Structures are given as C-alpha cells and as structure tokens.
Amino acid sequence: MATLEIRDLYVSVEEKMILKGVNLTVKGGETHAIMGPNGTGKSTLASVVMGHPKYKIESGSILLNGSDITELAVDERSRLGLFLGMQAPIEVPGVTNFDFVKTAVQAHMPQDKKLRIGKFILDFEAAAKDLQMGSGLAHRYLNEGFSGGEKKRNEILQMKLIKPSIAFLDEIDSGLDVDALRVVGENVTKMKSEALGMVLITHYQRLLDYIIPDYVHIMIKGEIVKTGGTELIAKIDVEGYDWLKSELGITELEETKRPVSLGTCATKVPVR
Amino acid sequence: MKLPSLLTEGQSTFILDGNTVIQNHKAIKVVIEDDKFRLIMNKKINQSNPIDIVLNNTLLKKEYAIEFGRGSDLRVNFFFVIGKPQSTQLNIILKAEAKIDFNLVLIGKIKNSMIVDRFTTLNENASLKITTGYLTHGILKVNESVLLKGSDSEFDGENLVIGQNNDEVAITQNVRHSAKRSSSLIHNSIVANDASKIKFDIYGTIDKTMEHSKCFQHSKGVILGEKSWIEVDPKLIINEYDVEAGHGAAIGQINQDELYYLSSRGLTENHAKRLIIQGYTDPFITKFVNMNHQRFVNQLIIRKMGGR
Image (cartoon, rainbow over all chains, first blue to last red; front, top):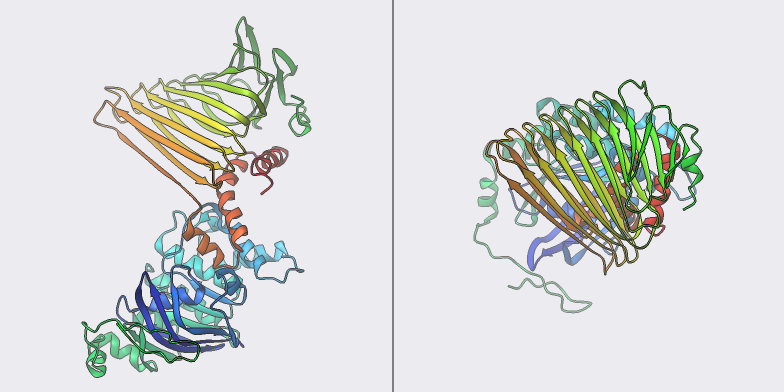
C-alpha cells in the first residue's frame, strides 16, 4: 500500500509564492478531494508532486513510501507509481494513442520483462470500451483533434492501463457532459482499491456524486485551510467559499508570505 | 548507384535505369522521346495494388514525366534514386477525373549539389495526394510547381525533410490556382539534425476570378542540432475575394509541454524525444502499405537521424 506525504510544502513560480505550507498525506485505498476557488494552487500542487520543471520548491518535502522524491525527474516519479490526469492534456501529433500507451505501460514494467502485446491489445480495447470511446481511438494521434471529453477519458484510459499507486486527477470533470461524467465517475470508482490512493481536484459537487471521497480538503491561497468529510461538499455547493473565508479571517488583500531559509537547522520565518 | 534489394525484389516493380527499362510493368506504357521519358498509366488498367516505380541514375537534361489518363484511379510508390547529374526534371500530369495516391521518396548521396525541378499539373476534377520524403544526403535544391488547371481539382501535398550533418535543402513550392473551386493543401514536416540547413519558400497564388478556391499551407519543424536551422517563408498571393486561404508555421526545439506530458507517463527524456520525432516520421512511413517498403524507408530515416 503506497503512501504519499506532502510536508510543509512551499512552492513558487517566477518569484511568486503559490503554495504556502501544504501538508497532505494520501494512503492507498483513500480518496481525497481538494476543492477551492480559482487560482488557489490546487493544480500547482498536483503539478509539483508530478515534478513539473516550471515550479520551484522553496522548502518542504514530498515523500513517496518514505523516500523524498523532490529531486527525482518526472519520469522517475511516474515509474515509482505517481500519475497525474491533466486538466489540459497535451496533443502530440504523429504519435498514435496506441503506441504511446503501449510505450508508457512498457516503461512501468521491470526492465527484464517484456510486454505481451496480445494481452495489451485486449486490455486496451477493454479499457476503451469501458470508457465508451470510439473504435478508431488506437490509431488516432495522441489527443490531436480529441474533444475536451475525449481527452479526459483518454487520461483515465491511460490510468487504467498504467495502474499507478497514487493518482492526482486534476479537474477531470471539466469538458465532460452528464453522460461522460457518469462513465468517467464509474470507471474511476471501479479502480478504487487498497492499491490506489487518489486525489481529485475539482470545483464541483457533480464529480464527487460519482466518486465519493473519504476526505475533503479546502484550499485557499496556497494552503489547505480546512479538512472534513463529504458534508463540506454540500456546504460549498450551496454557499461557496465566503463563509470559510469569514470564518478563518482570510481577506482578499492579504499579502503573499514567503519563507526564508536561515540554514540547515533554521525555522521558517515568513517575510515579504 | 546500386539499387537496394528491398526495392528490386518485387517482380512487378518498374525499374528505369538512366534511359534503360530494366523491368517492365503491365500498367505502364513507356514512350521515349528525344529529351523525355514518358510513363503513361491509363484507366483501362485494372490495378488494385500500388504500382512500384524505381528511377535510378537519372540523366542530365532529361525530363521524366508520369502521366495518368482520364479517370484513372491508382496508387503509386516512386523511389527516385538521385544519381550523378546536377539537375533533373520530374513531371506529374493528371488528366481529368484522375484520382492518384502517390508516395515519392528521394534517396541517394549527392556528389556536389543537385537541382530537382518538379512540375505537377491537375486537370478538371483531378485529385492528387502526394507524399514526398526528401531523404537524400548533400546539397539539394527543389523547385516545385503545382498548377491547378482544371476546375474542382484537388492537390494534397505532404513533405518530410530530414537534414543531417551538413545537408542543405532548399525547397521552393509554388502552387497556382488557375481554375475555379480548386483546392490545395501543403503540409511540411521538417527535422534538422547536426549542422543541417533547411529552407522552404512557399507560394500559394489564387488567380483572379478563380472563386471558391482554397489554398492552405502548414509547416512544422523541429531543430535538434545546435548548429542546425530551419527557415520557412510562406506567402499567399490572393487575387480573388471569394476564396479561403491560410498559412501557418511552427518551428522550434522540442516542445517542452509535449516532453513533460510523455515523461509524466514514465518515458525517459530520450525516449520521449524519440517518440516526438517519430511523430514527424511515422505518418510518412505508414503511407507505404508494403512491409518491405516500410522497412526500407524506416532504415533510411534511422540513418538520416544518425541512428537515433
């Protein structure tokens, strides 16, 4: 059973602090939902865990099964079991979906093992069928010309075949119509097991009607400010986030806190 | 140049070496004139498989013409082995209603430099889908002219250029719409390795009164070598109002977003880069139905990529 621990994580991009001390632990078998207003750092958190080179970790750590992965490259993190279903999956012209997924699955296998192509084809077809994707999917170029919904379903298809141990799904519900949302929701729910810990990033209750989370976290201004159960989802759906901002005394004009390292044994002191 | 066995082992492959027909094909009628070699293919021929043609050791000041008769519906694989001369001319003519799927590969080592003049003419309702792979080594200059002469004619041209070492490839594409409702689409894929230099000048012209015509040009290129460069200069000359036209070019180093996406699925950086480059080359390779041809073209591409 995998465990991801994010400890006191401060992250900046282009000199601007985005994450300001995020703490989160995700274990296999758990489903977490992160909600929050736009621009609060939800997607940044997912990208940083995956190792996107754009973001700079100022301090804090990300541990996967007890080992710090902050220095690892993106592909190494993936091969250790991390997965990120992206908000805006990238198009790669000329590379067929089938070739890409096959290569990705092969990359996750031990070096001395070879992919059994016949079995892989059957698995690919079954996953595509479960997600109600068109029959020509295998031979289409990766995400090129895909509708918004097809791209999101293709992310789930990859997740089904790669079988990660910790998966972040970043706004996997955006671009999906009601039926597609149900299909994606059912497929993700079927994947729930002790072998998979999940973090769902979303704005809406509708996704969480299909994939019931164990924990709901509210993120505002780069921090997880509240953690609870599904009761939080309903409250946010009705009342938005203003009640929480008032409760916690968060103002829109609050200035960005920046940590500074004072040496190896230093404590973090927020400064401007 | 000695022909690779993968090209010649097909018993039905038409092989022309200089001015000598080495192997004939039932679908091709050969007409030899003073300065011209004409290969004529007509509708009457019942030909479901692609016609394979190999042209080796082209002669100086000789014009090689491939003519498709009215209403012909054929697929052609044409392997053009560049020989010693410094210039050659290749003409493709489609009579009315001809519908042709054409794969053209230019291969071979160019001694000094080589100029290839290409003229393509499409008559009424003719449709040509042509994919060209420029896989030669050395300095190559290509002047390509496409004349959409007949109304409702369609030209769809895809080109793949791979530069390696000190290769220099300069291609001028001139597409002229001289008929109503004619359409053209050019798509160039360019890979520049090492210190290679690749230049495209693309002109799309729609003549006055040729309304409802469509003229589009797209180019994408990836620069892999520190000393390599790619230059694409698209131009549209539109002399009629009621038409559609557009051009676009995306040239640069490997796209970092693509690299991140592929890496996030466990592919190492090198593997991801290889896959992205395959995105340029694979669509060309898969145009060939014959597995031997696919293997041959794939080997050429691997060699052009320096074994990468």
